[in-house]
Length: 78
Image (cartoon, rainbow, N blue to C red; front, side):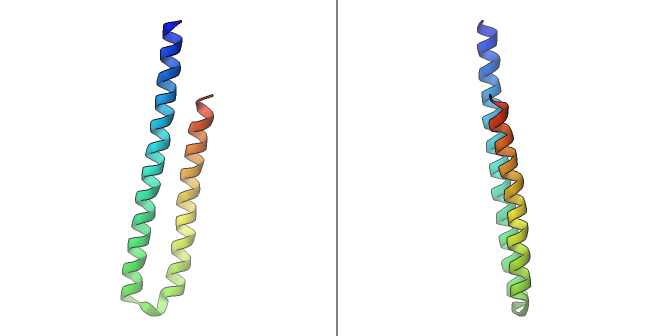
């Protein structure tokens, strides 16, 4: 009985850590995308619209992957 409770607790801990790591990774990725976009806009202000569009699209993809990872971790806990 105790080993079952221990396994369930460790599973929940693993899911929480997985969701946290996915969130941290997404935050770092979006921060890098934003920083690089600002550098690119500073170098070529005339390309602002193209850079901004690509930045938003890439950020959405990164956020989507992170959301998928968090949802997968939430489903694994049950």
